[in-house]
Image (tube, rainbow, N blue to C red; front, top):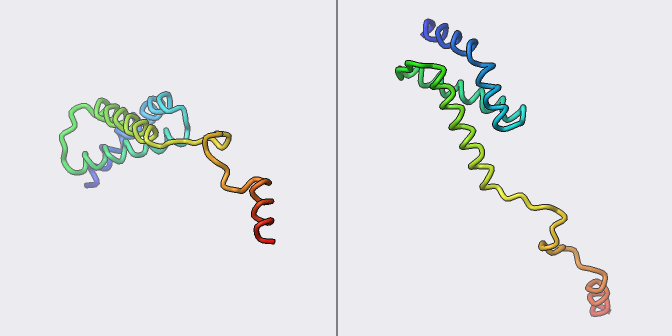
Length: 107
């Protein structure tokens, strides 16, 4: 296990900057790129630790990173962002006319 850590540590040191840069150019956000980079290496470590034969670590990491970026954009596409200035959404607060009618009815 200690030997595996040393081997993967060398892989990490060799490719961390390249993978981060690859992801950053795809998502254009430092925080998201950091998260996806760490997730890439975590998946790589899990596979490496479980005995998956990885013949080309660089290709494996780039493929994992690419898939994570694709998943990120898929999830982002599912989230619907609504602008506060959108006139299609009715204001839940009653307007002045409705307030006047309500207070008139109460009297």
